[in-house]
Amino acid sequence: MKAMIFAAGLGTRLRPLTNDRPKALVKVGGVVMLERVINRLKGHGIDEIVINIHHFGEKIIDFLKENNNFGINIHISDERDLLLDTGGGILKTKEWLDGNEPIIIHNADILTDFDLHKMVKQHIENDADATLLVADRKTARYFYIDDTNRLRGWTNISTGEVKPANYIANDTDKLRAFGGVHIVSPAIFNELKSYSNEPKFSITPFYIDKCNDLKIMGYTPTEDYKWHDIGKIESIAIAEKEFCDNININT
Image (tube, rainbow, N blue to C red):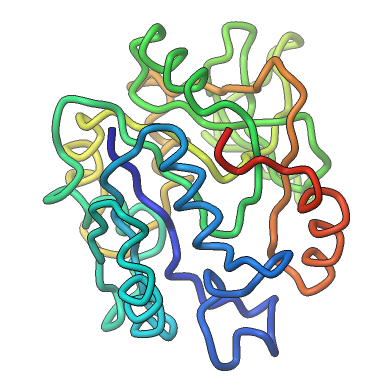
């Protein structure tokens, strides 16, 4: 199987750590975040990865060379001239990731240990176009997930905004937060290509706008698992305390 790692973010919430490096090269528990995610994917049998770069992108290239690409086939999707956001970033990887198998997409700043094999298995069994890691977690923005675990809409509970604009939530809908890991089928590339006239666009509006036309499923692991978003300075210390002593990134 193949995978993509989002590593092009500016990391503004992690300043000053990101004043001289990309967010993906910030260390958690003495180990670079990007290294943790690469080894996690390797541990699940992934042998080909695309990593997108933008902010201090050359430092990611140098880091990978210094580590001999961690013994797997790694491609660089270079966004240094134009940051493409998540949707445009995925579309740009088509030349490497198109094929017959599902593709795992993993944020470089998500530290977690749930079993990716089970998520891939459910994605295939559902014949889904996309499967999104979701959780019952406090946030302002939620997906509406119906009683079959299918994505039906989105809401910002702080503003009351709902998308699609005409969506009326059912009593059985669950509010779930996105967890920064998703699986897409290669057919998604054609949908992405026709979605936007601009090269830069986000994947979340795409999922919401297409949720009635495509089979986009939510996935919550049934086993206990650890998860943390390393998005802020204070998140690093919390993650190190909660995860790094016991986390098995290769599970």
